[in-house]
Image (cartoon, rainbow, N blue to C red; front, top):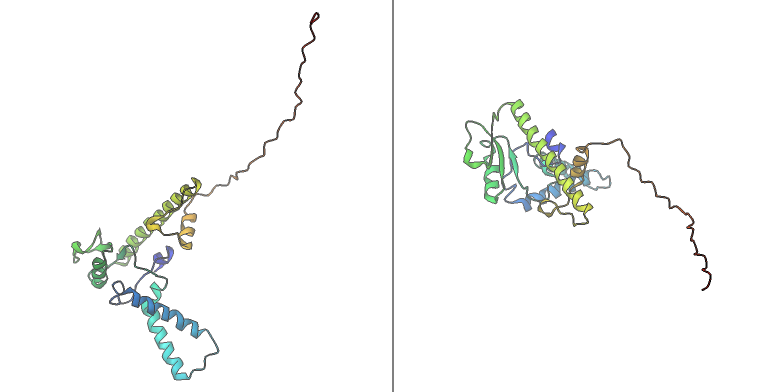
Length: 211
């Protein structure tokens, strides 16, 4: 959760809901329903009975448990990171069906043919999972920094700034990219040049006698 929040990526830590990728439009509607219920709960002008309020609260809690990690997800991901492909076989199957690359930890009981980018490791040990997830997150941060540098170069050259997949950088991406850049204490200042106003001396030739 901490590493996912570090780069603003959606995450699923509870049971994988069937159709979370293959039926994303329906899942997106449930996300909007969750936000709607949260907004209703914050208003004090609801004319509802205690039973109705209890039912709405239970619905919100259920949606929050399953969808809170992907509440900011508005489209299908470009790739997914899976810790245990054996346990999360539904996620892997849906990603393969949609052609989404799968990056995963491969333990001895996992099928390597299901994973596009394989990382051998122990998917049961907390330290192993934390280490590999942090490595993946660091790679994302480095990629965002490189992406930001490309955009800046294109902006300087007065070329239209284009990023991967033609998508603009999100605010959290800009923050990560900015934090990864080295800081300098030297402030650049431009001194306007002063024009010298010297009077030019023009010599007039003396008249020649006899002309």
